[in-house]
Amino acid sequence: MVEKIYLETQPKPTPIITEPFLIRELDDFMTDIENKVEAMYKTIILLAKKKNVIHFSSLVKGLKKLEAIRTFLLILFLATREKIKLWQDEEFGEMYISLD
Image (cartoon, rainbow, N blue to C red; front, side, top):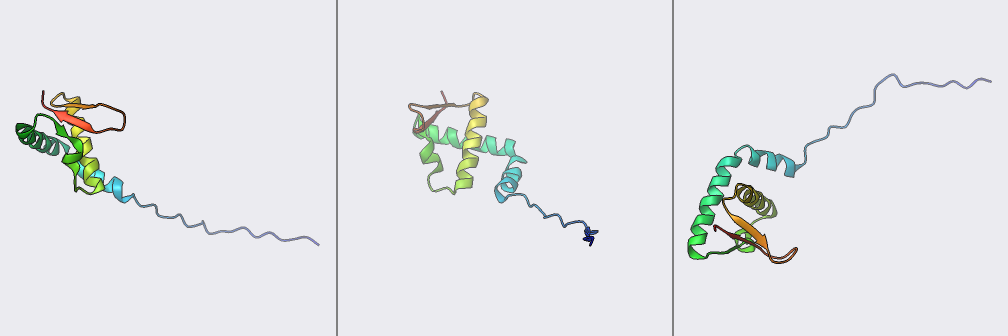
């Protein structure tokens, strides 16, 4: 006796993959990055008038995780453009920011 094999004629549905929330939020953030970098620079200038050295932790205190990440990115942009100095005394330690 011969066994019959039936093949599926309908294609299997493809799952819809949505973009993760964080990626979507960062994309929205990146579309206006230049204005945000300038705003962060002005904020640092104001803070530097009170204190020469700004602690990164004080800059992000009370912010939600996504906002802290955005702040970190803006700080990195400013540091690579040599508008600020950014350093740490020890690995995984406090980050410090200054204008000079």
